[in-house]
Length: 367
Image 1 (cartoon, rainbow, N blue to C red):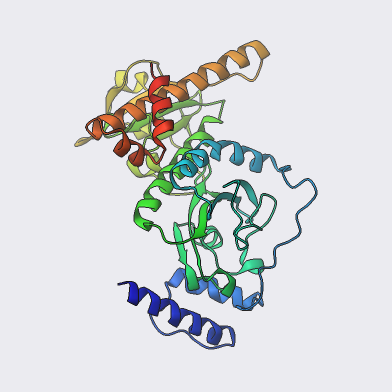
Image 2 (image 1 turned 135 degrees about the vertical axis):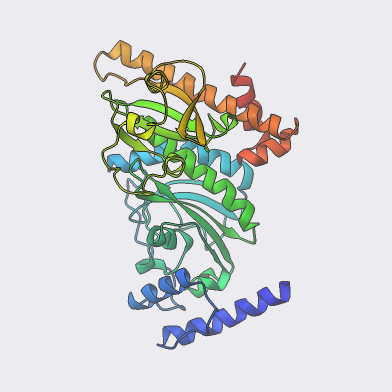
């Protein structure tokens, strides 16, 4: 198997230079999404043998001017910390880009000194027109998890680099950016991809929590996944009209996978529920079962009422309640994972994509 991988990488290296001169690639040598990226890189005038053309960093590169960039950087922070604790190392870097390929958040080892990774810093862009094919550039173009290994990159300089990236979706299902891990070596892509997908779901859930003028409702078929990144989330206006739904809720409810949702009410979504059950949807209380169709039901939990923007004292109090609620959800997710793994803390930490230390902290927060 290793020999096959080495041979494939050698074929890719030779084919890339022929491709850059206007040639075609052998069939099945490159995944279609990567081929499209190679074609865009070639059209941009990138040459495989050139060095990456990173733009110079501005003097105040750590300052994010766009409010949406600041919001995304804030929402991705905890999940990046957890992923770095599990997968970080001296030959790796973890970063988040916005939809324009600008790095807005990053984690790296303080003693790392890999020349190929050193330029990857907050304030730089990682677009195809500058550095050719990479996982984040492909993710932004394809809106999908992407893996780029070695000579699948367009530049020779990245021949030893592995990178994996997942899209980060906003409250309307739009791609806001990408979360990427890049380094020297190989990783179990299936395992890594699972953790990064969960992190992407967690970030989207945090973005929905910023819709302060809405009720928030969590739902899932299995109540054990409530309070975890795998829960569905609905944001609902005071009049019962649906404002937004995360990607899990869209799948659970059969809604469009992306884009602004069509006009819908909770009553229309849960038309098979009784009047009493629909009334409870926007009332605090324990998790309860709500019919979705004649042969299908969801476990629903009311999370939060709309938060008023008026009154500084009340705003601070509400923020504290929200923070406590999020901590409680994290603790609930940690307990559920430990129970699912039969008390094995290491396995539970791997399931959640966090370190054992972070798992201990979440369990302690739950009291």
